[in-house]
Amino acid sequence: RNLMKLVSIGFLEGFYYKPRIDYGILEQYKDWLVCTSACLAGDIPRALLAGDAQGAKKAALRLKEMFGEDFYIELMDHGMAEQKTVNPMLIRLARELSIPLVATNDVHYTERGDSLAQDVLTCIQTGTRLSDENKLTFPTQEFYLKTADEMAALFDYVPDAIENTRKIAD
Image (cartoon, rainbow, N blue to C red):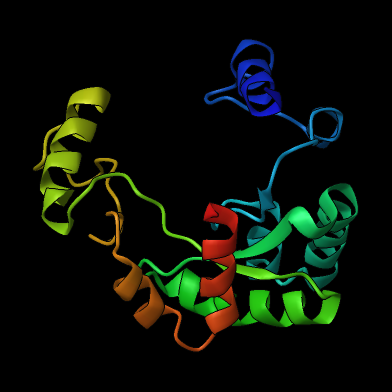
């Protein structure tokens, strides 16, 4: 119910180009939720990539205080240079603050081979063509539903992140 409430508030009250909520609203409806630190656009990874380690630490501690054991530092690997840069920083931050890690994957299509279909749908949505140089597109073809084995291989250097993915799913 709290997740539905947050999504509804994001669409009905916080919509600005896309649905949004702030930390105050999140605090209000945090019960029974598991929180992860998000993709590259999240506050923590964005701060780390900008060289603001203190800002990242502050954001992580705020979420840890809010969610306790239900807050995880999220690792993603879609073959993007920014993720390769930020993941070691996220791991260090998580270890320093005793926050568990979780391995995740943005899924926008089911199979790796569906990336072209995703590009076509995005072009239809944005009124562009596949041949347009500045069309909106994913930077890699790794935004598909990976198998457990694929995820384990991607994150073999942090087995606890894989274990926590299973823990959250369970």
